[in-house]
Structure formats: C-alpha cells, structure tokens
Image 1 (cartoon, rainbow, N blue to C red):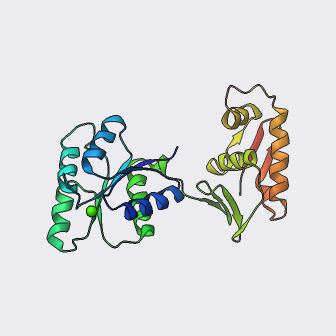
Image 2 (cartoon, protein in one colour):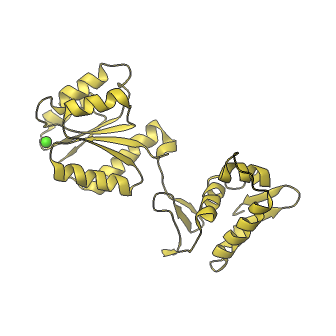
Image 3 (tube, rainbow, N blue to C red):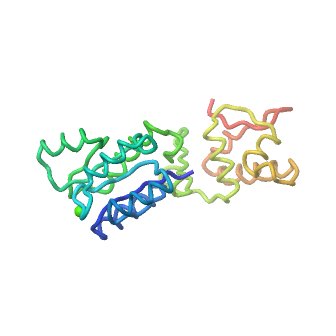
Length: 228
Ligand code: CA
C-alpha cells in the first residue's frame, strides 16, 4: 500500500514538482495549496506524512504544525518543513514547533524523497517501497521492474507478484495453496496447477541470467526462493 503524503505548498510549480517526484517514488501525493485546505483534508484522512511549507498565505506552516501537534489524532504525523529562511534560529524554531525535519529552499527533490523515506521508515517501515536486492537480482516495486546488471528482465505481471513475494520471504517454503492465497487472493477459484504454470514462466524469465536456480522446488512441500 502506497503511503499518503500531504503536500502543503502555495506555489503551484513547487507543489507539482514535489507531487511528481513522490509519485515516481511510489508514494501517493495529496495536494493542498493552503494550511486551511490541508486542515480540511486531514479531518477526512490522516496522511502518513506531511510536507509543509513555512511561508503560506493565511495560516503559516508553523501555526499549522502547532495545531496538528495539539490534536491527539494528528500529533504523531511526521512533518517535514520547507523553508526559504535558512538561518539557524528559524531552523530551531521550526523543529521546536513540531517539525520532524526541515529542508531549505531551493532543495533537491531527491533529497526530499530520501528524507521522507527515512521518516516513514522509522514510523511505518511497511510503507516504504524500497527495491529488494538478492545477489544482484534487483526488484523495484515502485517502477515494477526486475533488473540484473542494470538490464531489465521481461516478466509478466503475475510472475512479478510471485517474485516480489518470494524475495520478501527469502528462504521460506510455501505450499501451492499458500502461494495461491498470497498471489491470487482467497476469492480465487483456480486450482494449484496454476501455481506450477506461473513458477515455470518465472523460471523461464530468469533463466538467461541464471537466477532461475533461486526458485527451488521443495519436494512434498511446495516452493522456496533461496540464495543459500
Ligand atoms: Ca510559500
């Protein structure tokens, strides 16, 4: 599940730049052009993190952060403050008023994404879609790509899900039924032969790079992804 990141920024070009970068990093950006607007959004949905501009028309970033911290429903939302003011006093004021981190404008979107990931990883690690790497086999959940030596491997959507599941659960054995349940969901009516078919396709996709050997058949039990 993608993390919801609320961006509060009155300059539309910066707002869009941030939203684009967050989207590319696998997050779900929610846009607000003022603190008042953001306040209404937060009443409906609690975001997983807020990127908050300091200088806003109407209620400014500091006031909004104070308001969030004063409310038990919103006080734990991580906040990254954006500011054009770079002097140390302002930085300290910002952090004291409840920002968990801050960035001075102009900032690099990459840096912002890295800071967001660091904060979210601390608070809710399951929401960060970091690439999984096993012995040079790279699976990137946000771009839906599998790569070896920077070259993409052709892989179908079901095989991608299967490989993602296996790589997250390295060395664990799963029965066909468990795999059916995890990949197709319990509503599925397909039989467990389907698992074999997709395992075969997955192995074929990985064959050229030699990684098909990591998909192991465990006799009488099911399948395992293992590099041991
Ligand atoms: Ca502003």
